[in-house]
Amino acid sequence: KSKDKDGFTPEFCDGSTSVHGNVHLGCSSLTDAFEIVIRNPVSGEYIVPGTPDSDSIALTISVALRNALASKLGISTSEIGYSIRKTRVPDTNSQAMAIQLYDVVSGGAGFSTSAAGHIEDLLTSVFHHHLHCKASCDTACSSCLLDSNTRHDANQLNRVVAKEWLGPHFTDFVGLDSKYHYFAGAKYSHESI
Image 1: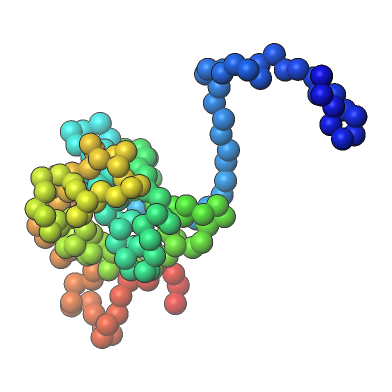
Image 2: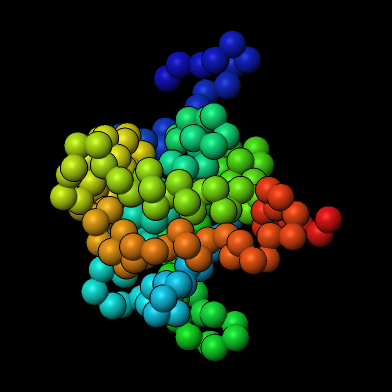
């Protein structure tokens, strides 16, 4: 047996030479996050969990929203994570899919939470740019939604279905109607002014 410089002889560990299965390691960390529940502006319906394409629609909008935010902030898409989850709408207690963005950096960098301040621009950009494909793909490709972070969700991403669910006039409902524009250039603010 060998000794270290302090004369300590390490004990032999029975499991040190074998691989153990079914062992799960994990950690938790705090970070900044943004969550939104989108409603179809014409039908008033939420993305309802368990309905055909609900996961695909929510996940695709989540990726497109992440891409729009990264573009707006001038950062890499790898700095913002995306996810979806089932939730309940407080007023009606009905189920809906929540779209989430979060900062990849532990502790948060404030990227995802800044989405609330840019929500009009982001939703417009999602619809007109990030759900549009220069290569005219059928679902998703590297020209629109696929990158190294979305490769594991490639089978669920479908920009065509997501854009159809939003409807052709989605952006008409994103901002205030022009009759309510009392100040030139006024935009929605999620914070008090």
